[in-house]
Image (tube, rainbow, N blue to C red; front, side):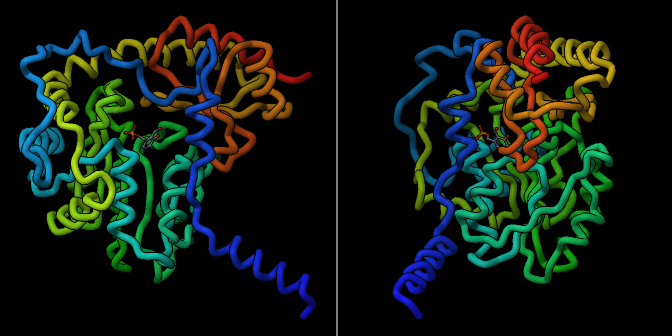
Length: 375
Ligand SMILES: Cc1ncc(COP(=O)(O)O)c(C=O)c1O
């Protein structure tokens, strides 16, 4: 073997054994997503501290840290209708997903993740050295979660099936009957189902209960970020069986050990006012959805196609004609409007639009979309 071949082989080996250690989507979201007309959002407008009924004497810097601050454990447990022993508080759904996956899988395990998916779910599984397989949610099926697709993709080595409900990016709701079927598949091979429910409370009427209640194979993550506008509190959680929950708390000792106590105190107050906080954003989300419906009705399938959802804060259209990359560039450079490029969801012909921040901005951003379609 020549020296050059040896070198090439060594490089290839490094490339294939190197772990994923970053997220291209997150870097883009942090550094490049903003614009005057920002349709690249996924959560509702920030809820201001001034509207939270809190006084400085209710806050403190240091607390008594063990595994979970009891009043917050109870508040999360009460909201979810579970025992506090099943609650793991985490720094946002982001850390909740990381902890849940890290506790449930070993390097080399097969992990099945929906496609399209929130990029961090994929990159986190890859960072944890899982063998990631994707199963499709098809547009011709209105991006519904289809248990038959999971059955087709499943392997005996699969340890985890990962889904979002509501689905990011399409906001499609998966009914309980379908989730049960997914639970049955997981149980048949001793796997678990991780359901990221960070958008679920954006179903404002008859909000479904958490899928944690559907069986022991379900592990659920969520937070007060997307639907409540409280991202800065980093109030996330995992719902898991008590033994798993303990293991996840122990694992968290290796990362952050203890959360910021002022954020825990504020989170407890947020839970006491959750209804009011959710309703504030609901008005904007519903106004934006009406504007979006008018936009698609006026377009009448001429330039854009999108699966409609009655819920959620995002939608995932594609162009009927024209190059999406050129469209997104033009939209930003000439029309001061941003959307999330579909390639972050491994669907480069699509783009994601977010609702719930500011209806005037949203309407103006939408108005600019057709102007950016390349001729
Ligand atoms: C599906 C999904 N999970 C988790 C997150 C991160 O949520 P958090 O701000 O609670 O960490 C996002 C943010 O976009 C998301 O879309």
